[in-house]
Length: 497
Image (cartoon, rainbow, N blue to C red):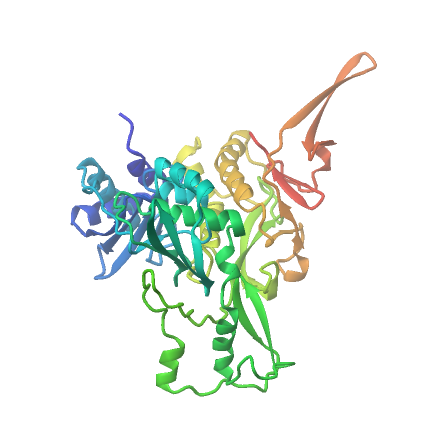
């Protein structure tokens, strides 16, 4: 009998110690359900540690989909793919699935206030939160009638839709989390979105595009909040003093004159400046005020393929850490190399970089040796064998290294193809910023092409490779490794090994 995918995930990604302690935490009843979103397939657990009197939250997203499932824990553990708290949570989740404890009674939705978790108008999510019948009915109704837009400002739309002589007031507005608060007076209880809300979303999408709510955003109000920090407003002359830049549709204030200092803000005023947006008011609401947003340092990880190694596979993968520029394409100053053998605080990294960190850690020499120690003919004693640099490894050992590294490299190449922070360090060069060369990763995986040509009384077989539609010789590989292929400042790997 095959293992359920939740338990299989634990055994495939957890170390023996993580699995053992995860079982202990689960058996002691230290895993407590906090929140469950059956519609989205997300669940949150509160987990008590088995050693310390500490509680951590574990977030599991899309748990019903083995390929799309994502886990996140608040603990600082980063020595493996999952921690003991995540392992215990998956065991508890499987236990609840087996006992049919996650199936709630029929859910009833209140259309006076329902939240749609999407950042812009997304048809896929709208279909999912209504129903095929409701969606189709709204599309047909939109061909006959349209909602009357009463107000469209400050990321808030107020409208009125008349159906069969009955008027339905509608409100859709962006909330603090950049999702949508919605309101309608109808009695739909089966789905988060009623047909009237769906029609208004479709009307806005067709008429103005998916980013319509960003176009009615009150940017002057946000700019004034940022300027208040220094005692200025948009009514003042800002020439040579301040500059506004935008990231992800949010304004950020850049100080041009270093002589300008922040003003001392009384506690009462500070509370006013940093207050959160008022609660959503259905139908006859008030425009919401945006929370003051200040620019934060963007820490990014840089991926370095280091060719200063003579043993197979001919390269190592290192990580750099540094502050990114405004465009998020280059490092500001000199990034520092991360010692992957020690604990690293990853809280400042983006979610994508946190995932990259775990993937690169799996490519380190100690992880390769663990795999060889389990699978090579020298099982159990491989780590005790002294290997000198430059010594050629047996073909069987090279095959095992390739077997371990190749799928992990393919995943990195596929996910980091658009990452601007990818570099190579040529052989005989020390790891300094000046010696790093920017390259790109390709998610186009290579396959060998064999060419047979007659030569005198013999046949000559040449091994070629197809790159971007061109057939080139394998000798054009600028790297010394057979596992990756460097050509024209683009790094490729093979589709199969």
